[in-house]
Image 1 (cartoon, rainbow, N blue to C red):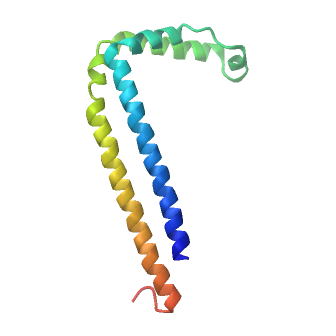
Image 2 (cartoon, helix red, strand yellow):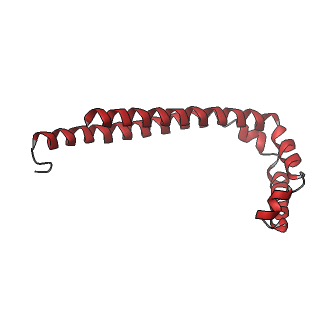
Image 3 (cartoon, rainbow, N blue to C red):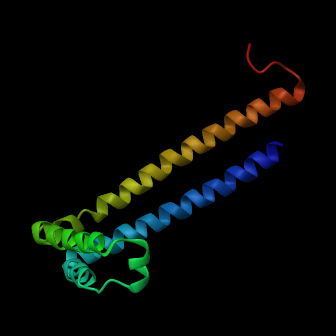
Length: 129
């Protein structure tokens, strides 16, 4: 049973690490995009796309148009701040790894407690004194 506990813990830790790697890459990519100023152009182009026919079946076209107008308004208001926000990707990557470390420590602590509890159950000793 202990072996299964550590196998599951290892798989969860691998998934947690993969998620952190993906998050760091996305933060770096978004930082480069924001710092270059291309994000404003890209978002404005996306906001001008016509509404697809399949979306009309699921969502009211007026609501989609309101969302598009909201994106354009947000870009107009905050467009000048986006390059400054792109420079924050360096410390955001560090923050992702700090959160990864905290999550990994919690996961390993839970697995360690489970390991000890499984040992007590196996030998027949009471769990809580």
